[in-house]
Length: 317
Ligand code: FES
Image (tube, rainbow, N blue to C red; front, side, top):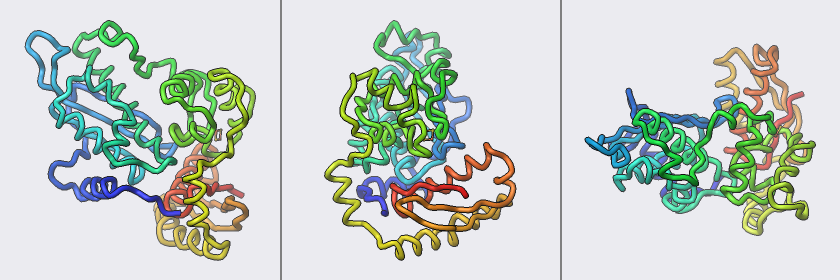
């Protein structure tokens, strides 16, 4: 199912990939703030840098003058990153004010994002938090003193127990974001954070996503596979026949995925499709190392979801 993006998302994306004047793709050298979020293994990553005009006596009054990003992600990840940089620069925000920018602000700026792409806006807000934390260390600003409610992502979140192995998402990070974003179902977690969007093993495993939801909000009826009326209607409208679905996936593999994999010494063959599961055979160097195989599988799945239907899941046979 092709994504329905707003005109603004498409305009920002096209301008960014063409490198038009006023766009922000890139990286600032010797940046005053540097933050990264995501992992290339998981399919999305964002590196965010900003430069400030330093206040001569009071660092909390530094003004962000330039912001740049590098992202490995889809249309909405690029558009959300553009939105973030534009907001910061145009509104002459201080880094402390920048911390108040939420993923909802980015979504509003973009005139909305598809539900399943909310994580692109979350990624931008997270990278910004880390960049502000970096600026605070460099400028000797105690963030907890100025913004006691702010909890920038820290080492514990990177090193805590991994709940979702497919996307390397840890328990402390999940606990914080479930509360911060008001996530009440596994589907909402997956849309916002990607966790749970791969093999699904972490959904109901002990200490998994459902347990974290229950501990945060109390035990609720299982909404795991519920769709919102809007997304159900969109899926019904765009439903392809099995024949057309097979054709689209085969075309995507032939035209986009296989050439990329061949360049890395790998290959892929479509074996079967059953009930939103796409069975593929992978050969080449990616089949020899578990870590590489998982990264390639996630990347292929990301492309199939992006270009064909977000409900599809890749199973390597
Ligand atoms: S472990 Fe979470 S989706 Fe696979």
